[in-house]
Length: 132
Image 1 (cartoon, rainbow, N blue to C red):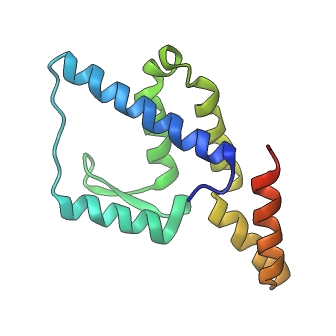
Image 2: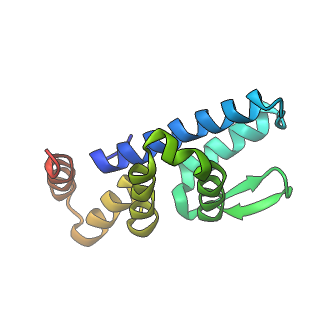
């Protein structure tokens, strides 16, 4: 679950652009690879467990790749539809996540620094309310 409004906008922008890109390819009669559900589920598990600092399976290369590398590839893949959708600013927020970590990464950092769950809850509250 995204921690901040900016995180939510970033993820929404990626999803919006990805849908538009896939629609664009499909309307040009281009097909895409369909991978076994077990492989997709493996990457979902890895993403949940290790976050953006982990490794995912690059199905095309058939090897593990740093998640950040794949995120940059995804951003390149959807770049041509971003301006038409007005999603460019939202995609720029993805860089903040890549630079500062996900909401979970930031919460873990607070806990590691303070060893106090109340501090983590205060951090969550402050982060959420920062743009309101």
